[in-house]
Length: 106
Image 1: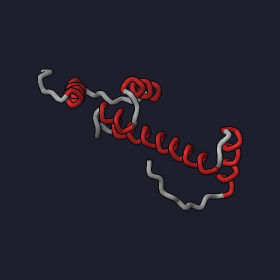
Image 2: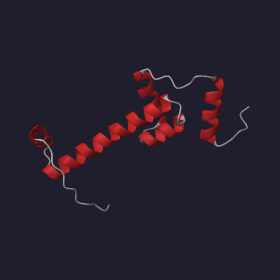
Image 3: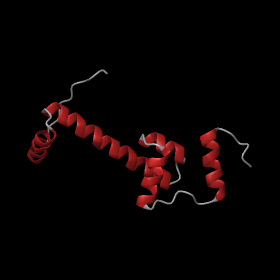
Image 4: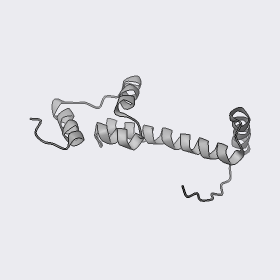
């Protein structure tokens, strides 16, 4: 994996939180920041995928792909958050067709 250097200024309170994280996770500062950044981006990807799914801009399968979760994990998240993404039989048929790449489901 190729790595690039990033220079960023952060507020004092974040630095203090990172120090606590470092101690509790037994990590150096660079590894801690990479881990926190990766976790933050993963959270953002899920949140974005769920928003787009709820807005009916993407299919269920696309939401699973974008959020980098399994379809079963996504089902659990959707149920937990009470997201409504199926509005009609036509919508779910279209979603399934997109998932299997076939229009032979009618």
